[in-house]
Every structure is written in structure tokens, then in C-alpha cells.
Length: 322
Ligand code: FUB
Image 1 (cartoon, rainbow, N blue to C red):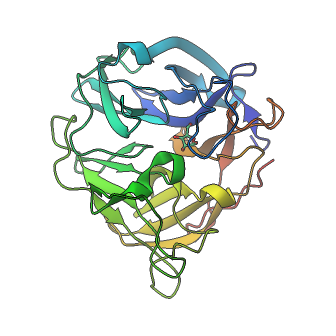
Image 2 (cartoon, helix red, strand yellow):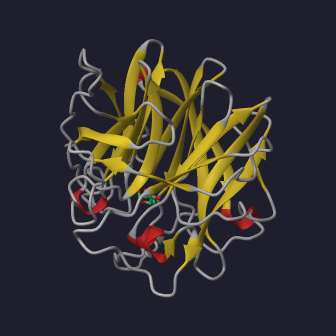
């Protein structure tokens, strides 16, 4: 599979999170709906009200089953608006859907919904994860069975409104020569519905061992955290937002620090870029989205898949966006 393929032509699905559960590949995307509002940095043009899940045992030929709506914003007790990126994890036969959603004060938090099967439907808990903020949860199960959440997103994702896990009066980014704001990493409690600790900064260092700076828009973290493990190393991948790249950094430790490695995907059509990386039947795949089918309208994105390849030294071969 060398050419990027659209996975569900005619439907606008974005931010795909792919996992293998019980030998089958499941893809959890966001569902783009046009709000009829002009595009702005708060994402008001995204009117995202529900999630579907797709599954397949034949990704090479893109044969997907649509399991329909698995969670609707109307069924979430604390909901305001905008169901942004989500992810799913499994523990002891229960499936946990972690989702980004604004509360009634238009503040993003991370919620949890539960099901006893990966295709849902999922039932939301009464409130969001205590101490959660911002967007784009990704949950990774480490080799000892512990689960870790990675999260955060700048601008419309509100990460600039926090320092040391506390809201600040006036959201802002650091000066260009200061360390960039970081994605967050936190171990989940065994309940899977609480943080076990305070979220920590996931620091990304440059080749000289210095933290990436806020002015380094080509490399600094913006949103779309993803974690995978390959040949003894943790690979943290993410979007650079305004410069529109999918980049990655590696570490020997899940908490980091991570060292910047390079670009996985060059800019695609549309304004956001977002992805997941998953191994299935012996091959690695990059799931992502672009806005080609909607004529470049960034809030109507279409989900794609392309094979991801490594070099001998473990670096990822850059894929050209289209
Ligand atoms: O889909 C809404 C938001 O756009 C996601 O949460 C971000 O990562 C960006 O893809």
C-alpha cells in the first residue's frame, strides 16, 4: 500500500485513532460537521456532535465496517459542545473511550465513556476526569500493564491557558526564545477513570539537548499526541499545528525527555493534521486525514491510511502529504 487511501469516501471523519483489539483493527475518528460559522482559531466552525467506530480485518483493501454512532454529545451529562479527538483503551475486558469536549463554560476537559465491547456503544460517566484540561487524549498501555495518557493542544485546544496544571488568568504562549509549552503525560489509575498523579510535561529536546523553543514552529508540539513503541524505544508523535507537520521524538523512558527525530508526514491539504500509528498483521500504518475531498475546507476532513516504514536505524521514512 504505497498510495494514501481514503477510508470512508463521502463521510467526513478526522483524527483517526487506530488500535488492534482481539485481533481486529478498530479506528476511532472524530466526525466533522459544518457549523455554518466562518473559520476561526477557536474552531467554532467545527460542529462535532458524535463519534462512529470502524473496524476491519483487511486494511490493505480498505474494507471497513461502520458500527454507527457509539457516543452522542446529547448523552453526555456534562456536555457543552464540540467532541474533538478521542482514543480508546482496554483493561480487564472493559473498553474506555477518552474524549475531548467543552463543558457549558466552553472550557475543554477530557471525558470517559465505557463499554464492554470495542465497537460500543459507550456510556459516558457523569463528569470529566478530575484535573483534566485541554484536548486530544491518547492512551498507551506500557509493557507492565499500566496505562498512560498523553494530551494537550494549543490555540483552540486551550493549552496556553494553563501552567503547572492550573488555569492562569490570561492564556498566552511563552516568548519565542523560551521553552515551548509541552504535551502532558500522566499515568492513569487502575480504575482507568482517574489520573494516578499530576500530569507532567513531556519535554522534547533538540540535537544539542536543549528543549525546543516556543518560536520553533517547525518542530515544537502543538496538538495530536500519539505514542507507540518500536524496537525498545518510545515514539511520541504529534502535529506542529500552524506549520502543519506530523513530527516525532523518541526516548528510552515513557516520561522522557524525548529527542526530536524528524517529520513523519509533510503538510497535507487543509489546516489541521492529525494521526495515529498502529501495527497490524506485521505492517505499520499511519492513519491521518486531509481536506482534499471537501475542496480544502479544513473543518470537513477525510480519513486516510498509508503504510509507514522504518529505516534500519529505527528512524521513520518521511511520507509526502498530498
Ligand atoms: O478535530 C478537532 C481538532 O482538530 C482535534 O482535536 C485537533 O487535534 C485537530 O485535528
